[in-house]
Length: 282
Length: 339
Image (cartoon, rainbow over all chains, first blue to last red; front, side, top):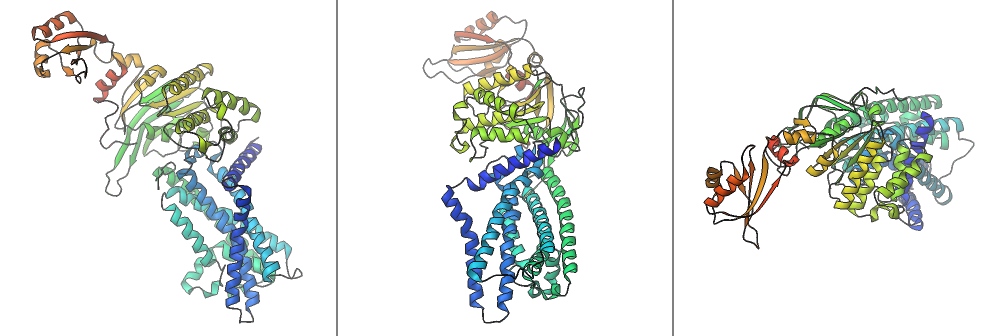
């Protein structure tokens, strides 16, 4: 009974998520919006690559960063999007308090809403990989691809994505007007810190530990290693496949655990501060 | 897994409930609730009546698990609102009036259906219930209209229906008819009363600014001010708490006698109303203590040259009781009060 009730609630909030995400425009406009962003990112990366293509190693490096950028769509769409759900529910529809006091609870609700974000993130990632494969020459040798580690990596990465999303939900609950800025800042910070666009080795030494505690740094490195057959970080390249996979799973699990605790505390803090129905009329 | 509720437990019970908003950005600390003790039995329609800043909404927020108290204890259906919030949420519904809330992209019916699913109401129960509620709030014709196309009043009625879609044990109505037109407000008040009557053990906690609404709907009323309960009883008993006597309003033609002189003449405090723009008369209001005869007072006024054109008397109203207990009207803001 409890499982089917939870499933119904998840399905209902996912349905609401789809209405919110897709219903603001007619289907043609929505379709254009859906493909415009990944296409723009692909072309921007291609232009960057073209501007610096004089190095012989750039082909492999570009492929690595391209794949990371493709999967970073999940961070942009799911993680930041989950934080935005709180912000919009409180400020725009003013329904956050009604959802919060319903027996469904915010965790289930946000979980359902994140499902649609996962679908949109998947479409974005798939489109980027397709554009890369057919237009930009970002291809991989299937003989070098390791499906099982790759599948494990993807599952761990999705779990970390969801966990990070809940943390940003908690942050958005506690903050009011500044939540918008913080969410945008997180999106940018993760892009720079997680080795999406350049190797972590190029970061200042004092900043690298921050990169290494973020699960996405490990996730992207694993995706490169197990999909393309090579990574981008010199230090991580010294790890065997098993070590890299083990470290990734451990970091993702630890991060998810910390995220769960952080969400619980942020939820309590929001309730203590009375932020759940506090609109700022920004 | 839901815990078995204690059917003997009162619907709502608070002991020494406190809520303080700490000082911030130059604003002083606000004490919204300063030790509130309430006991609301199952099956009651209970009113919280108080001026702006009295702490009514803060109290509702705590009972709805939206806000932590700073001190004291609050239980809903026997469950602690802090430690057993999930059990509380299974049993409550919340409607806040005066809001423009709603998912604009959904239709009215979709929104109600969605909340029925959030509360785990089976479809076979939810659908006819939604149909009935749409009729009650007079939105049946707009069932398939998007919420962003509704007027504010229509949104409020939809919000009202949403509160009933789960058929909660305990319903919190926070100023539910605020901003509604007279007919809609009356219709909804009647529906709430019928809803409580037809379902044994259902409880409503109502906050309202409207004295008549509280008087008509509530079995008991707690008058709150500055975070404290000043009185709690049935409307009739609260009215009786004002000393006996008659409230008198005279329409008089007067050359400008001041109130103090009149009080000396008739022996009771008086208040002048505004001059009538057409008839050139003014209203003189006073409460005649028990044992005093109105005729003597009228003669005393005429001896002072005041011509009485009309006489009206009325019983003590809840508003009289409220002013007597709180010391001011509902519309007067409380300095430094809470939400």
